[in-house]
Image (cartoon, rainbow, N blue to C red):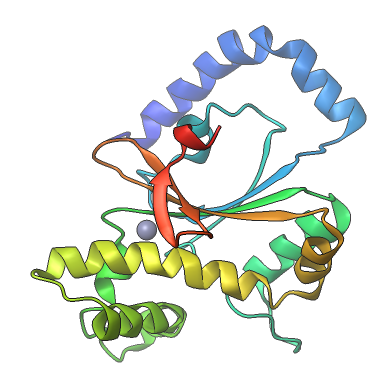
Length: 214
Ligand SMILES: [Zn+2]
């Protein structure tokens, strides 16, 4: 695990090596602005590194990360909605073409659905946010016969990806993009242990190896 001092050292190396190596690309991105084709919605988990697992470079991915890679259903009110604002910006301003919701194995957010979160001020937003996973938990409990709790959590992580895709459709800009054929949505599931990404096949309702989709 990196300590803060190592981050500074890492940044020094970035300046010396990578920024110089990609000087042209960085310059172009500044001059022309960003125009990513892909919105990646992933978990904040430190073990899920979108750019690393997809071999992406600066300018490739517009990324939203939050606890549990949840997409809250569209709600028009005066509250502050970070994830919703990111989705709207990516779709309505950047004109992205693909939206990927990427869940992952060993997700603390999905696991915590099976524990009681204490009622205390220090966790008030966590507790509320995790309510977004309840529907996936109930779906697994009602529709799957599971032997172990681990199995239940793995299934919840995958089912949750599908529910987040459904929630994406509640955003007018996303729904319109899908209807017009300008946006495609994708459900991915990244296994931390094997490093394999699977995608949700909407024809068979199964997660299949992403590489075979190419
Ligand atoms: Zn997670």
